[in-house]
Image 1 (cartoon, helix red, strand yellow):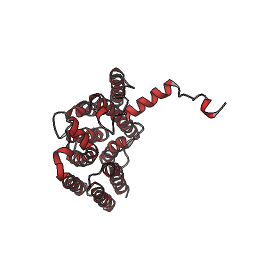
Image 2 (tube, rainbow, N blue to C red; image 1 turned 90 degrees about the horizontal axis):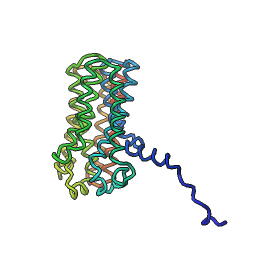
Image 3 (cartoon, rainbow, N blue to C red; image 1 turned 45 degrees about the vertical axis):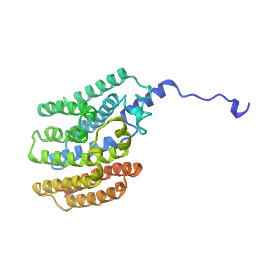
Image 4 (tube, one colour; image 1 turned 30 degrees about the horizontal axis):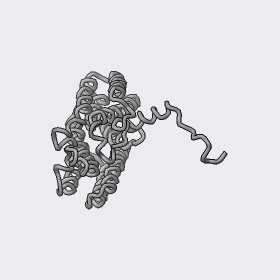
Length: 297
C-alpha cells in the first residue's frame, strides 16, 4: 500500500470540540489573562503592603482566568456577524459555525457562575463590587457599535479587579485604589488602541468603531500621551505610598518599553502594531516586580 493509499487518522470529535471551546475562551492565547492579572496583583500586593493572603490570591487569580474567558465568549457572541469579515477573526469558532450561539451563552453563564461562587468566599463589599465587574464585561463588546471609545469601557472592565482586590484584601477602598484604577484605565486604552490599529482597515469597512479610528493620524501621539499619563499616575501613587527605588526603577523600565512600542507602531503596519500590543505583558510584569521588590525591602 502506498503512502497515498493509507487511511488518514482523524482526530476524535471530542478533541476537536474541546479545541473549539479553548479557542472561544482564548485559553490558547493567554495575553489577555496576563494583561488582566498584572494589575490585579499590583492591587493585591499594595493593599496587603506585601504578600497578600494566599486564599485571596488564589481566588483572584482563578477569577481573572474565568472572567477573561467569559469576556472572550460574550465578545465573540456580540461580534458573531462581524468577525467573518475581518481577516484576523474569520476563523474563530462562532463565525465559522463550529460553536453555536446557545453553546456560547451556556458557557458564558457557567464561567460567570463559577466566578461568583469564588467571590462569595470573600466579603460583602467585594461581592457588591463584583456586580459592576460582570456588567462591564457584558456590555463592553456591544460598545463598538455605538461609540468610538469602547477601549475606555474595556479599561474600566479590566481595571475593576483593582477595587475588588483592595476590598477583599483590606476591606477598604482608599484613594490609592482609585488612583491605581485610573492609571490602569489609561494604560489599557493605550494598548487596546494598538490592538485596534491591527484591524483598523477591516473595521472601517464593516462599520465597527474604535479609538484607533477616532484618533486617526494622531494615534501614536495620543497613545504615547496616555502612557505618559499612566506613568504620572503611578508616580503620584508612589509618592502617596512613600515607595522606594525598586518601584521607580520598574516605572523607568516601563517608559523604555513604551518608547520601544512607539517605534514599532509609528508606520502603522499590522504585525508591528500587534507586537507592540503583546509587549505590554512585559510592562505589567516589570511594574509588578518593582512593586513586589519595593514592599520586600
